[in-house]
Length: 296
Image (cartoon, rainbow, N blue to C red; front, top):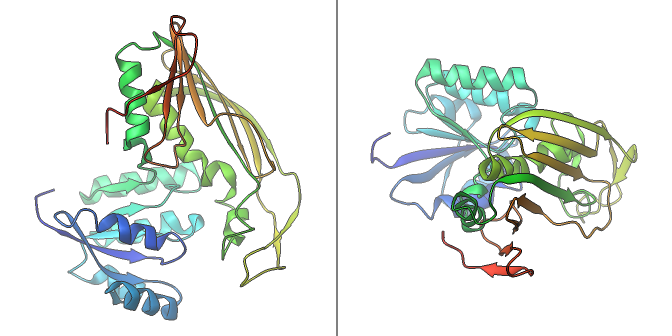
């Protein structure tokens, strides 16, 4: 890519879209939000008016020569189809996680982008934030010796109490592993390295939930995916990882992410955020010490 400013077109303007408007505005020298589309044209028009964009149909956005990058913010089950269509139209694509709801479709997206000579990217990007980057530097500098174990825990009771459209979280492509798991697994790979072996179990605690947002309060939400996942990981360097991703727990005292090495341990902040507190424990100090962020 050159130093030109790339025009970005949104496909899907749901709950996460305003966050991307704010994020794109931080880099005016590189990207500019210019248009949006949605299967609900009234919603697209309202979002366009609120953010100074041009409302289009999906078809109009894809054929527009003024759109360089498609920002795919559709529901997970539509990610691969929308991305493949955008790639076929010659657009670069960035999407919310997951890349696809299965490995085969994800591979198709990557292969199509390579064949078309365009770029494809996928959230999360939070591993680039100051908290995790500081932890990576500490590990690379030998602060905990050789990593031998890592843990990652995301436990809650799901988004239905507050989300205005929580139904897709419990359809194929949803659930805690594909919704929140990418933040934690991306962080673990960035911190410890590639994962070569996995094992796990999963289940669903209940078959139905109740929406809590004022616009849909009381509506039943059928559960079509598992909502509690427990996993074991083996990293290429031999380290062992333990993960739990759950929408079935009310409360817990488990840490977000920790990495343990031969010479110490690191406590790492929420990988759903760019910042947070990094703490180091060593045999010399024998207590958790706050570490200054080396990256911003």
